[in-house]
Amino acid sequence: MLEAGDEVSYFLTEAEAGKRAFSVVYEDENVLVVDKESGASSEAVFAELARKSPVFFIHRLDRNTEGLMIFARTMSANEALLACFRERRAVKIYHALVFGKMPSHHAVCKAYLRKDEAHARVYVSAAGKGEQIVTEYEVLEERGNKSLLKVTLHTGKTHQIRAHLAFLGHPVVGDEKYGNSALNRAEHAARQRLLSAELSVDTRGALPAIDGKVFRSEKNL
Image 1 (cartoon, rainbow, N blue to C red):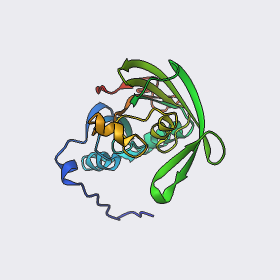
Image 2: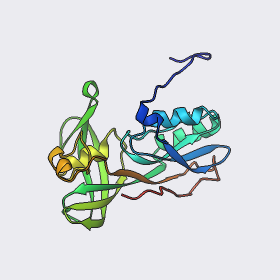
Image 3: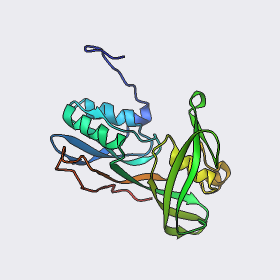
Image 4: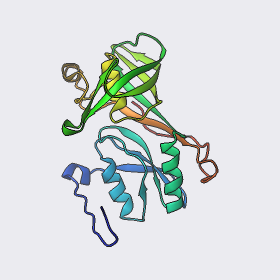
C-alpha cells in the first residue's frame, strides 16, 4: 500500500515518450475528460496529467483502445465519479470495427466470462463458469467484409467487448489477443479498431456541470 511521502515512478517506452498520449476534451475545477490515443496506456495518461496537477484515476482503457477517459481533480469529485461508475450511472458507448456481417442489425448478447489472471486474458462461454456479461450492439455501417458497430456495455468486465465479439465470431479488426491474426495480416490491420466514442455520467447533482452532458471523441474508425 502507498503511504504519504512515497514516490511513484512510471517509465515510458521511447514510442510512448515521443507520442502525445491524449488531447483534452473538457476540463473544469473538478474533472478532466481526455481523448486517449491508441498505443498509450491509461497509466501514461495519468502520469502526464499528474505532472501538471493532482488527479484521481477513475477508470481505464486498454492500451490499444482509444477514446474517452475521465479523471477527477478533487477528492469530492473522485468520490462522486467512483460511485457513479460503481453503481452503473456512467454510460460508455464504444465503436468497434469488426470482421464479418452481423446476423442482425441490433442485438443484446449474453454470455459468461472467466478471467485468467496468470495469462492476463479472459475466456467467454455460452454458459457455465464465470460471471454473466451483457453486450449490446447496433450496426452503424457495413464496409465490405467488415461492420462498424455501436457497442453498449451493460456489464463492464475486463476485455469484455473484444472477447465477447470474438466469441460471437466477429473479432475486432487489429485485435491480436482475441482476434483473427490471419485476417489482420491479410488486411494489414496493425492497429486495434476499438474506440470509446461517448461518455456521460449521472452524479445525482454532485457535479452539476457535467450531469447529463454527453462527451464525444473526435476520432473515427
